[in-house]
Amino acid sequence: MPDDEPEFDFAGCLRRVRDNDQTAARRLVEQLYPLVSRIIRTRLPRATLEEDLAQDVFLKMFTRLDQYQGAVPFTHWVSRIAVTTCIDALRAQRRRPEFRWADLSENEANLLDAVLTNKRDVHAGEALAARELVHKLLDLLQPEDRMVLQYLDLEQKTLVEIREITGWNITLIKVRAFRARKKLQKLFQELKQKERA
Image 1 (tube, one colour):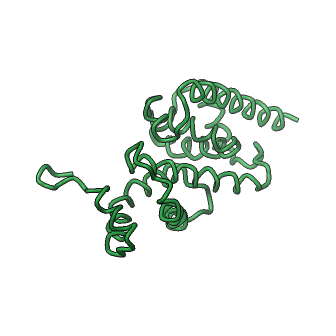
Image 2 (cartoon, one colour; image 1 turned 120 degrees about the vertical axis):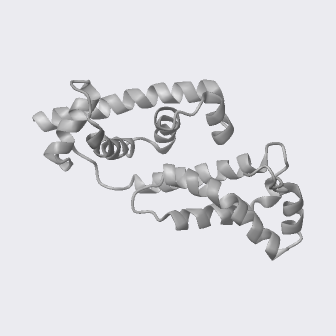
Image 3 (spheres, rainbow, N blue to C red; image 1 turned 60 degrees about the vertical axis):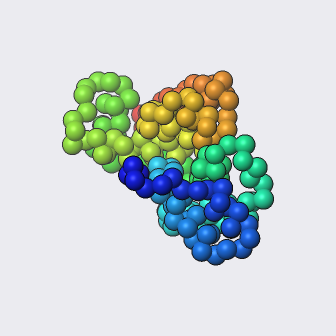
């Protein structure tokens, strides 16, 4: 935000929205859209449109506006709604068939094996493929487990930042991350064993 641009007045805008001011509601969505969009893009479930999830987030925000008491910044409150909406979408996605080692191409299987066993360095050209594989494996985890690993390992967020976004305490974040990493290792080993069988 440029220095000469005034900070957005969330409190004033929320008062107008609560008085059914449609212009204020549009301004609020315009102000929050980049934040909501960024949250959704980083955890967008496959086969889900970003716009659909964003609409869900804003619908929940407006229908729950009377629950916002001002104890946390409004952007943090909306972030939690966005995260929860993504978790719900990921849970719905888990009803899909099981992902197997055989679902990987030969190149993907070799790359995943190299990345997870540290047999060799991954070249820059393979980075995108590695990222896709990581997301395929993360999709196998529970939504909360996937999210904590995404925040910590992929986005390099601090424990405090994750606490502010999710509302979880730091101990829960650490425990969930530890368990999620163990589950990810177990899933990888299961895939490897199925491939050998």
